[in-house]
Length: 126
Image (cartoon, rainbow, N blue to C red; front, side):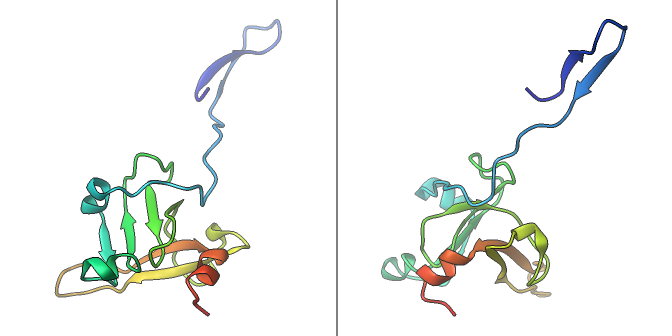
């Protein structure tokens, strides 16, 4: 229970517990067609190519850190943003991947997300 009041001992002292268990990175999330429409997909422009496209959905309801990512059409997982190749937020068995570069014309910013190493292997990436 997050933010619970806890009685400590016989003295008149109360403590607020803010330590909540958070969802681990890389748990499976679902990207159905309705959810995908609210996200951003790249890499595929036809139905045939859709299976190999990568998709990012921010504010995903199944992910504590808000981001659900499908890496080159593989099973989507909850993840988080990162800022450099060796970003420790990704953990020892993952890497920081650039989903899209910044684009001044569209005022979009560079988007980078943590991806488990196993996904890179599954996608045949080196």
